[in-house]
Amino acid sequence: MLGIFGDAINYIIDMGASVMLPIVIAVISICLGIKVGKAIRAGLMIGVGFVGLSLIVDMMNAQLGPAAQAMSQRFGLTLSVVDIGWPGASPMTWASNIATVAIPIAILVNVIMLLLKWTKTVNIDIWNIWHMTFTGAIAYAVTGQFWIGIVGVIVHAMIAYKLGDLWAPLMQDYFELDGLTVPHGTAAYMGPIACVVDAIIEKIPGLRDIDLTADTLQDKVGVFAEPIVIGGILGAGIGFLAGYDVQTALPLGIKMSAVMVLMPKIVKCIMDGLLPLTERAKVLLTKHFGNSEFFIGMDPAVLLGDPQVVTVGLLFIPLTLLIAVLVPGNRVLPFGDLATIGFFIAIAVAVHKGNLFRSLISGTAIMTMTIWIANQTIPWLTALAQSTGSTSGSNLVAALDQGGSPITYIFTQAFTLENITGLVVIAVIYAICWLFTIRCSKKRAQELENQ
Image (tube, rainbow, N blue to C red):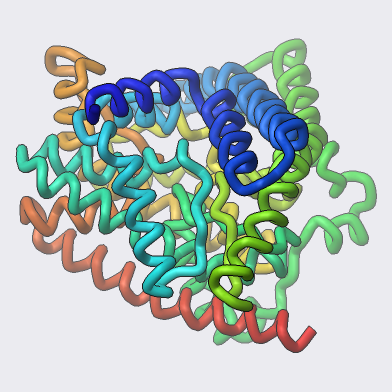
C-alpha cells in the first residue's frame, strides 16, 4: 500500500507545480465543501498563474542566465562550482529516498501543531515541501542514517510553520495578503536577517532617515522610477555589463520591462484562484476551533507581484556576483538562482516596508550568508546528486536555494561536526535573528491592531 501511495505521489510530483498545485487545490476545495465547478475553476486559475510564472522565470533564466555568465567571464571571475539553483535542486530532492515519506510527514507535523495550538499556519502548498525534504535528503546522504533524514524533515517543517506565523502580519500589512502567509523557502528562512538589519539601522542617526522607495523615487525623477522603466534600465544595464552590443542589450531591457509589468498580473491569477479556498477554510477553521486566527500557507511566488521586490531582485543580479567574489574562500559561481534572487529578499522588502535602501543592505547580508553556507555544503550537494544519479564522476554541485539554507546547514552540521566553528557562528547568528524576528512580528501585529 505504501509503495502504491509513494508511486502516486511521485507521479503527481513529476508533473510539476503548475499541474500538481491545481489538482491539490481543486481536491482540497471539493473536500471542504466548495462546489465542484467553482473548485475546478479555482484550480485552473492557479494553474494559469503558475504557468505564467514558469514562462517568466524560464525567460529570465534563458536571457539573464547567459548575461550573468558572460558578465562574470568578462570581469575575470574564476569561481569553479556552478550554482544549479532551485530548478536543479528540487528534482534532485524529489528523487531521494526520503521524498516518498516526506509529504505525509510534513502534513502530519502541521496537523499535530495545529491541534496543539503550536502554529496558526495551515499549509496547502504541497510542492514546496521539497524545502523540508531537502534538509532530510542532505542529512541522509551525508550521515547515511535514514532516521536522521526523517528528523531533518520534521525539524524543518516545524520551523517553517512557525515562520509562517511570524510573517503573517507582514503579509497583511505590506503585501495586503489578508489571511495568507509564506512559510517556505529562501524568502521565509532568510527574512530573519532583515529584522536584525532593520533594528540596527533604526539605531543609526542619518541612515534611519533614508527612505528610498519607488514612490519617493518617482517624486524625484518622475517616469524613470516607474517599474516598467526600472526594468528596462536594469535589463539593458546588465546586458551592457555582459559586453553585449546595443542590438542585444536593448531587447534584454525590454524583456525585463515585461517582467515588471506582467509579474503582478500573473500573481493576481494565483490570488484569485486561492480566494474561494481561503474563505472556505476560514469558515471551517472558525467553526471547529472557535475564533482563533489561521493563515493559509502559500508559495513565495505570490510575493513577486510587488514591484519593489522585483526591482531589488534585478539589482542583486550583479551585486550577488560581486558578493561571490568578495566572500573569502568561495568557489560557488551564482547562476541557476540569479534570475530569481527576488525569492531571497522578498520578505526582507516587507520588513523594511518597501525601503529600497534598507533592502539593499539586508539583501547584501542575506546573500553573503547564503553564498558562504552554499560554499560549505558543496560536498553535501554533490553526495546527494550522486546518490540520486543526478551527477556522475567528480563533478561538484552547489545550489544557493536550500544549499545556502542556515536550517539545513545547522541541522546537518550538528550530526557531522565537520566545521564546529562554522556551526557555532551560524547557529548563534541565526538564533539572534529569530529573537529579532519575533519582536518584529509582534510590532507589526500591534501596528495592524492599532490601525
